[in-house]
Structure formats: structure tokens, C-alpha cells
Image (cartoon, rainbow, N blue to C red):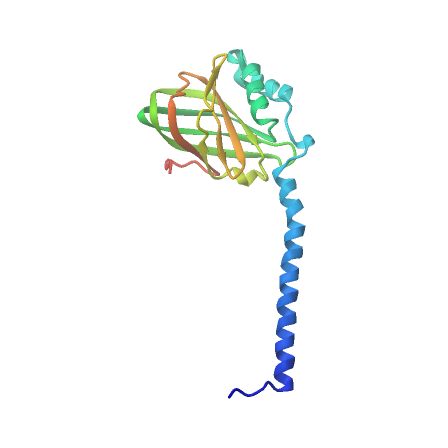
Amino acid sequence: MSRGLTPSEHFMEHAMRTVWRTIAFAIVLVGWGLGPLAAQSADPGPDQRYSPNELVNAGHQFFGTISQGLATVIERAVSQWGQPNGYILGQEAGGAIVAGLRYGDGTLYTKNAGDLRVYWQGPSVGFDWGGDGARTMMLVYNLPSTDAVYQRFAGIDGSAYIIGGFGMTALTANNIVVVPIRSGVGLRLGANLGYLKFTPVATWNPF
């Protein structure tokens, strides 16, 4: 037969239950407190986003004389994904015969978090061929912080377009959308499956 609990044991049992209830209640409160913060970071305010006119002006200065048709492709991107809270201007080179590779570097621009140097690399596999060297403008959506760009972004199926001499695709990761807009020698917009990996330093490893 089991013995009954002594008064001191009853006290300790009650105290432990109280401690665990307090911890659980604190976790719930922390969750409630972090919920609005997470929503705010995932939904940048209007003052943090770039308007189509701002994007077109930046693109015209970057692409120069080959920028004809840029406004049309930016309007297409904005109509589909809204106004970005960041964009990247850079250059890249790549090539493919069924399987391909792409390397690039540039600067990420934001309104409230400064500018950031970025590099990207990525493989692709599919109905893709040719080589290119292109200036690239990438629109970045739902970026919670500049460092969040350092990850792999996979291509969104059916998002490739050629408009006014520019090629546009879309990639996504963790609710962030990156829309590369390219103009150069060959658009290489084959029906490929691949990704881009963004890194803080240059690397030859696309994986």
C-alpha cells in the first residue's frame, strides 16, 4: 500500500504545478506579443516599398540605352506581386546545354535598412540552352530584413515572360519573392527548374 503525501510533499507538488502554469501562461503571452511583430516584418508599410515610377527610373539609369520596354515588364511584375520593398541591380553570366549554371553579383537597395552587397549562384535543369551575360534588376518582395536574402530561392513554375526585350522570371523562399528582370545577350528563359542561392561573399559552389 502506498503511503500518503506529507504536508511538505503536498506543498512541493502544489508549488511545481504553479510554476508550470506560470511558464505556460508566459509562453502564451510571448506568442501573442510576437504575432503582431512577425506580421509587421512580413508586411512592409507603404513608406518602405518602391513605386513603379521609382523602379522604372532606377532601371533606366542602370540599363541605359537598352531600357526600352522596361516600364512594361515592371508594370507586369507590380500587377502580379505588388510593390517590392527592395531591389537588386547587378550583372551576371551563365550558360546551359540542358543543365546550366548562373553566377552574378550586385547591390540590394532598401529604403529603411540601407544597401547590401550580394552574390548569387545557381544551377538549372530543363529545356534550356545557350549562354548569356546580362545586366539584371531583381525586385524583392516581403523582405523582413536585408540578411534574409541570403538563402536559396526556387523558381515559380509558369512565371517566365519575355516583354519588350526583357526576360522576367520569379523565385520564392519563405514568403519572400524575387523577380529577376534581365536584358543582355540571350534571355535563357527555357522551361527550366532551378534556384538561385544568395551569399554575402562570392563562391563558385552553386549548391
